[in-house]
Length: 85
Image (cartoon, rainbow, N blue to C red; front, side, top):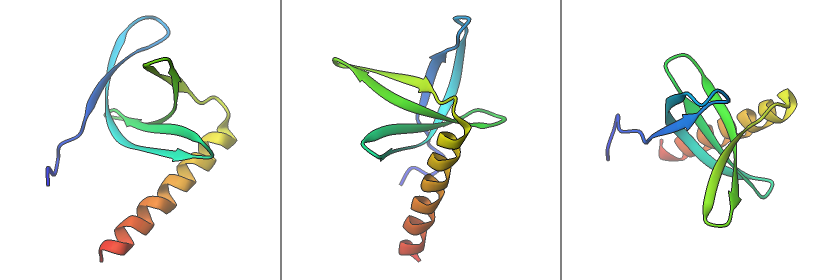
């Protein structure tokens, strides 16, 4: 197991500036894919959208949708870690 190893991705913001994030998790919910990205300060929830063979990360602006996704992710990870005990 590669503890401490996280995938790093580069994202371009609205101003075209590069930002690096580690991928904290990826999961599907309600037939939609999501990615949790983190930097030194915070965690971001992004929707993964596909166009042909390409994938794009889209910012979630609805606070209720973001909260629902984070809650589902927390429940899923708690269940996963609970099964390992």
